[in-house]
Length: 139
Length: 441
Image 1 (cartoon, each protein chain N blue to C red):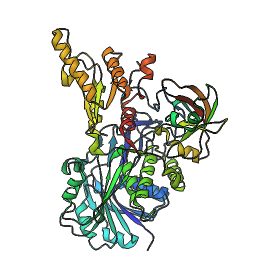
Image 2 (image 1 turned 120 degrees about the vertical axis):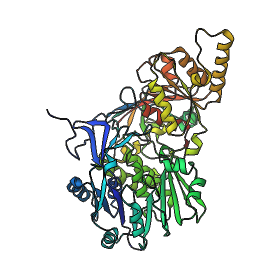
Image 3 (image 1 turned 30 degrees about the vertical axis):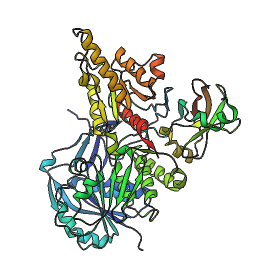
Image 4 (image 1 turned 180 degrees about the vertical axis):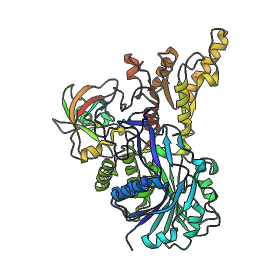
């Protein structure tokens, strides 16, 4: 009778499960099914981050300057440098900052420094009950 | 000043991650001193290894130490009658990781080489010591005349290792996952200083898991702090060892705070992957861009403050429901020193047999408990109306909420858009708790 077992050291390879996303509530979604969370689950530079609600929209440049926000479908991009301690999403057309990426995405700084550029579009925006912007970004 | 060379002393294990499955089954890699080796190698820092391990591992140890560019790899002794295989049940440290060292109690340690001979050959400036079940006291006593700095990871197998030691120790390094810090020192700096009051210690480093870290230097009476950095955590095994290695390095010279930040960032990068090449690439990127990345806000939530954070666990905690996931979440929150509150277990269950006034009394106690809590986690074991009402009431009070939805019940629009974080497993929930309650710094 044969047996199962790990082959040898050094066989680990990074998987290709390169997508992660929010849920409209800002959750990083790399987990497997129920329970404690297993599987390799290794995601560093996702090809897509979906439905990310930006933070501090009401005090960011775009809303402060215009008292309004860009519309659904308008292009956005992730700023390539840290600004006041945060990663910032800006409106592609005007270059004005729309809001901060939630801090759980700060690890994307390494992806940016590797030369990846994240751009995408506004999924939803509005000013009631409070100014909000939801974006999807692609590498 | 001579260039720093660190001699790392400790055991070598085979870390076997039972919950990280690749094409070959559970993931295995060399652990023990090899975590520090990867850290030093990633930033091209000088180091050597002095280790205890079973003989069957020697070829692999030599091969991988060469790969990791060590200045030398010396065997202190053999471990017989035990394989030094560490089973890791829960790699991400959502709670207790459930380490299991196979037949460890019958391990026999036999010395092959003296530490003084190895020190003479390597001529290190620093020694980073990971105590083990080898005769650690004897090693430390043998280093009495060593002129360099000794740093000790004061976590495992530490009983009496500093008895009769009167030399100066540069660093005592602890973690809030160590029983010594939590129980013997009461989880406080005061308890720690009291324990070492008759020793000459230059600095104490306390790593507070995902809540950051602090370093206290008695001669300066000064405390340095660093935030931790959230990453999609793949594992937590050896992450603290990586922090140690960068922390004791001479990078940034006297700038302790900046070195702590780099250590925290590199530790986070280690937690993100099992691939050494990827870790090295990321660590070097962080180091090359440290002035910018250093500005990124992280999370600070000291161990002692977590006990004051009351977390309402809303769930159908009824006798006829399988609440094992709720119980596990409760254990994990306690492991991280939070204060989870279980309303039904505290205030009682509203059965159909209850009189109206008794049921009302329980309801009012639960409302008071909701008011007392700082964070709510709704555990959707199914779409229980009570759980969802509590979620809405809590959110409407302006406080943060998390949904733990292990079985994908969360489909309703209001339920999906109400919480601040929607999580599918406990590891994600624990990460979200730190994001909700931690201070940005």
